[in-house]
Amino acid sequence: EEQEQEERQERQERQEEQEKNRSRKSRRRKRREVWEEGRSGGHQPLAKMITLVVYLFLICFAVCAGNVVELDGEKFGSIRSGLGSRNMLVLFYSSPVNSKESEASVQVWKQVSSPLSGLVDVGMINCDDFLDDCLSVKVAHFPQTILYMAGDPIMYSGPMTAKAIFLFVTNNVLPPVAQLSTRLLDWWLQTEVKGRKAVICFHDKFELPHSISAIATMLRSSHAFAEIRSLSSDVRERFRVESLPAVVMVNATSGTFISYKGEMKRKELVEFLRGSAVDENRGTRIDESIAPAETFGMSQLTHETFRTLCDEVCFIVFIPHGNDKETLKERRKRMKVANEALTFLKSLKKRSGTAKFVWASSAQETLYNAFKGLVQADPAFVVWKVRRNRAAVLPAPLTAENCKSFLESIEGGSATFHSLALSPEKTLGMEDEQEELLEQQTEGDSMLPPGLVDWSYPTNIMQEKQGADMPSKKGSEDEADADALLI
Image (cartoon, rainbow, N blue to C red; front, side):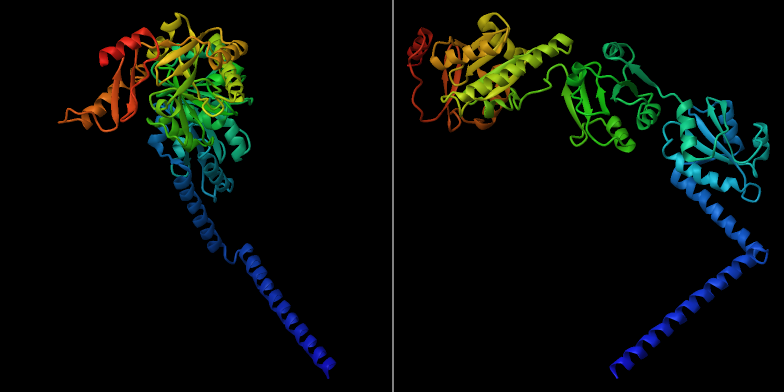
């Protein structure tokens, strides 16, 4: 009985499957009959209407989505005469009744309009409506393409594909981008920029990226573009080029530059180049004549970093200001020696937990001159005891051996420390800020703000916590005289 039930169920399933196959075949047969009847002329008006509706939809979609300009006789006449400031790629087309290929060419125009935006304008003219204008340029067939460069026509006779059209335009339209070598870069910044923003594209390809070419044409009135293919180590360091392609916008007057760090997409690049403020997510503003390329994790000594990095003892390496080849080489050398000195100092037990290295530029004139006056020479490396405002200076040349010997003499107590003539606040330009803060806190009250007591000396000024002991009277004769005067 079980076997009979299974056989009965299998027969039923086979019958259902056969019925499905028969119904599927019948539907296919009906569709084939309708299609054959339409081809033979039974539904010719309906087929033409559907084709026309699809064609009009494609045209409207292309014009809206791809920024394709629909030309009339007047607009086309201005393009032929060269009155417009932009170049234009023009498609001459007809209705599908007169030209079956015109329908496909409209689709191609939709595809190429977006990649070519910025390089040329993309337009098309319907020769069914403006036959005289098409005959005036001797259009022999449909579709046909002409590139107008300031009114001068360039006929296209290749295949009507998106890739072929794109290559045709990019090979004939030369973007306003200067091709530079490393040695001509500074000359170009000084003579060719002329008040515009300078944009440099670094790459290693045979051709400039098409997005840069389009943007250069689009922004030619406000930006000057240049490309550099072969990069030396000095140029890589100067502009912080980590990978290629790279885009840098330079202020030729001040020397500062903004390095783009986003994706090489046209929309993002245009927003970056047109922006007046620096978006930290897209670019970093750097003074290329001050900041070193490799800092080994060291921060620059400024009035913001002074309070956190130089509370007791501060180790400062001074790097020269400038962007010529020799200056860049000396900056690299000094930062490398400073990193070796930091490693050596951390190996000593006494300074293992308090070694704080910072770098400063010779362009920070007040700070640089304060230490330069102690030895009457270039202060390459300085150990600054901030609380007592005394410093030991190692003049240039800065080498690893000299730096290690200098640090050993400081650890052994044999180094010579000099008193600075200026206070740390004035040296770093913080004096005005602190005076303003004291005025706000002591307005209407002659007493010192809580938590601060000032001890004044002829050579330095210190601030100690309220309730601390008087400063030690051990030291120079000037300090002893100052203590006597204070008492």
